[in-house]
Amino acid sequence: MKLVRKTYVTRREKIIDFVIGIVGWIVINAIMAGMMWALQWANSALYERGLTPILLNFVSPIIACLPIIVNIVGLILLGLTRYWIALGALAAFAALQLLVICLGVIVGAICFAILLSTGSAP
Image (cartoon, rainbow, N blue to C red; front, side):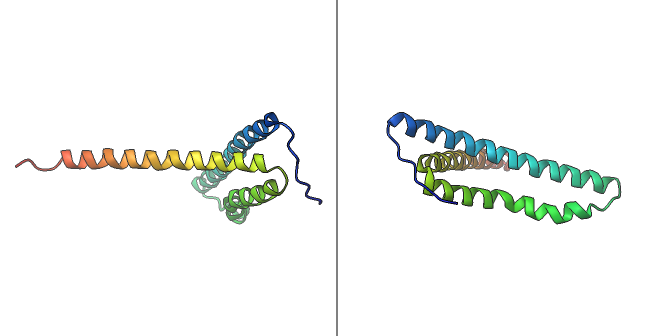
């Protein structure tokens, strides 16, 4: 496989590739999260019926490691060939990471305020 770096001629090509990277990263990771959710649901459904899911026990770790492998390999390959798509994927990851951190701080502050308000009065 020959890795050839794309030469961008216009700014429009860069913007389109950047947006493809953002949307593509979100879609691909949503599909992998859906696969993991479906596998977990199937696993628990089989346990409820008293069956041992031998095949699912073998496939589960592979599916669990799949997002890490796909994201790292995808970023490396895209960084070598279409780097604006790779930058879009990194931007999507960074934006969602920032959102999760902000939500964690907000939830932590709310829980702290609730715990303080339920304390004993003097």
